Length: 248
Image (tube, rainbow, N blue to C red):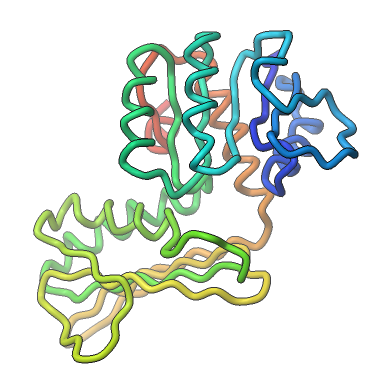
């Protein structure tokens, strides 16, 4: 039985992970860690990693990017793999991830959906097939989302940039903003309770290809994180992604 520590356990996604773990036969919740208590925790809960008494087999992080340092430091201290499902990591966070991968397995994904991983592959292949096409990415999320554009939109753009290394990202447009040949436009919409929508437009003078992924329930991200945790539990130190899990 793989014992899981969920970091950010009192958040919406942490709650989904805990609920999914209850339905999983080969994995279980060891405890949750969240720096903010609801006072109604009905599971083994700690407000600090220093208070965790038993070492987990794997850690799943669905917290906030400012807390990535603390979860990585804990994971390295106890030498356990960690799934980082938190988005909006900055350059300093990414350096910490790179440091951690020299000691432990780290699974990093801006989006834990298998569908999004496939969308990245499709977008990359389409951009390569239509080298002269204009490419625009549009994402929509609920009106409470803090970061814009989404980490997933950036992940899609980065996938395309692998075959278009000269590409430049343009975030929205205003005023006199004539489109340049090499740009990838990235646009963010924030409305009501949208879980997550991502579209990639690949457009030439004669045709248009639209790739789209809709997330209808946050449980799909929890399911992806749990599968990543299962995969990571048996891996050596290093950095892993959805694509590595597909290959296994």
